[in-house]
Image 1 (cartoon, chains in turn orange, red):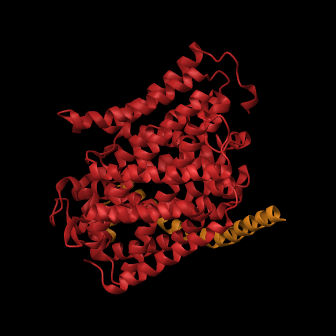
Image 2 (spheres, each protein chain N blue to C red):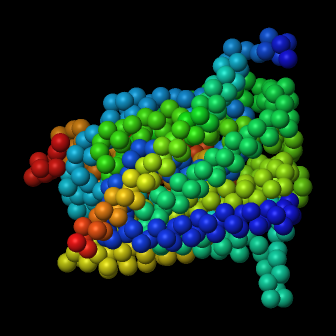
Image 3 (cartoon, rainbow over the protein chains, first blue to last red):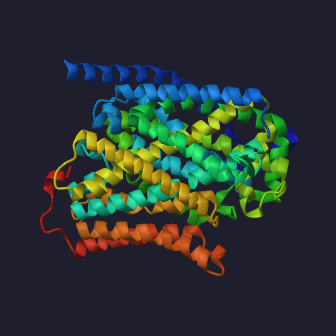
Length: 57
Length: 503
């Protein structure tokens, strides 16, 4: 495996690192936004229900 | 077929839950603002997570896999440059976002009406809607082909004693599901169901990425790239499919895509404030690439396993588009296959329902309504929107039946996207240049709208159509449209500038 990295060009190494870092970041970010999205969904539903209560009121 | 009964049960339960949730959310919709922009109550995490479902259409999965299969990993270089541009311009500087939000416009053509003229609004609306519908039109046919190879399903199925081709039937089923969600509750339903689908789709992407890399190993991936593409498998400047012109086209396109692309601007209009809109853009730009790159990697792995030559009875012209689906069908084990199938169908629904809704909004608000003497009542407005949704669904279904495959998926998407950039040139000009005029806007919209269509027609009627590279026409359209915009604005200025619309 080490010989494989030794034979690579700088751009090839950069490509693999870029892919690796981005994929890991994507996983972490997605988990965070989905958790945050749950709270925002609750906010949206509450606001929409509040609007309908105001209209009916 | 690659499935076992439990896969269908899992997929059925997940899709049923999503349908029930989508239907239930319609009771939250009380007026037109709720239906089109969710009452402007969307915050950033919900926007990003539901937006991620919209961004992972089944076509974008097929497209990213095709790019990986036919070009290796080099696309990331283009992605990197485009991401940097978007991040700096839109995410940090708030280019277009800040000024557009202050106008309180809901759609791009609505702004163009205020800034230029009703005629520009109608033309923008018409061209954007046409380009958007054409862009969307490839989704059902490619999604169906993808799913058929993913499932290893037969090309024909027996219905009431008749042997019917499976692709049109599958297309009808997928469009029916997408229509259901677009009809049910408008933007509220779309956001809610997209959020649920985001959980499923992203989870499936995590699992498949891990399975794919584990299946072949890093050394085999590297050998495939160097053997099939050389340095062009890593560097877009050296890639046969990309090159410098393609890169410039992609960068200019990314700058213009933001203000031109109605779904994005509609989401901006839906946020509770401009800071949320900028943050959403910045976060999406920073962390969005990983998803596309993961799926591109699947394409490279598919190439490693299946090889570059068409096999398994697949037509050579279709091979690069569906080889990835065929590989995934073999890779994913039972049970996870059911989740993946639900994820794939969800990926289709989440994109198509959003876009159908958006283009129907553009048609009603910016093409039809300007001709009406009296404004529509809320009930008639929603009724007309729903009629347009149905009409668009029928049109794209028919397109799928007759579509003749001459471009790669990426080229098709970029060319149809380029058609909208005239609106982007006009928006940017209108927001930032006092001398931008109605004549300039007309010129930009017409040139950008026509040139990509000419490209697609020439590829089909010309003897050496294959030599007519998409990037020549795409880049040419943007440059010519920009020049025309500036020239006509200087030569034919507006007599009465609409000062109230300038920020």
